[in-house]
Image: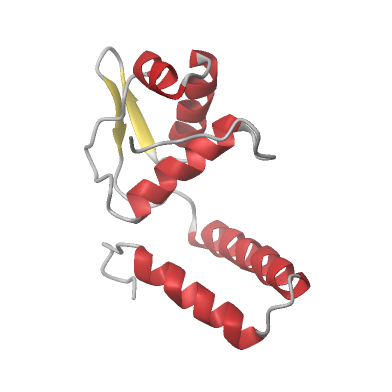
Length: 132
């Protein structure tokens, strides 16, 4: 099973599913053109409400991660973001700032944070020519 949800987690189930799809794409477990399970199939497999899966798929479509094809299902799009460079940069800086702040409050120093970031980067399959 590619996806799992924790109904007891603080994060809503639809957000868990969105993040797991994004993670699977980033790690190369899902590639451009791969078909996602239907809403009904995934809801049944995860024992969750189909509306939750639908909400997740809608969020992924809005963010440009997947594309819905009427009557054919949902498919992974290419990894390129449709956002302008300035907006992409702003979001990146916001994400990193939040992560570093949280790591600081967990008691990690700069080197430990860099090491953890490097480990995360090694797990991602970059396909764009400008990624390092």
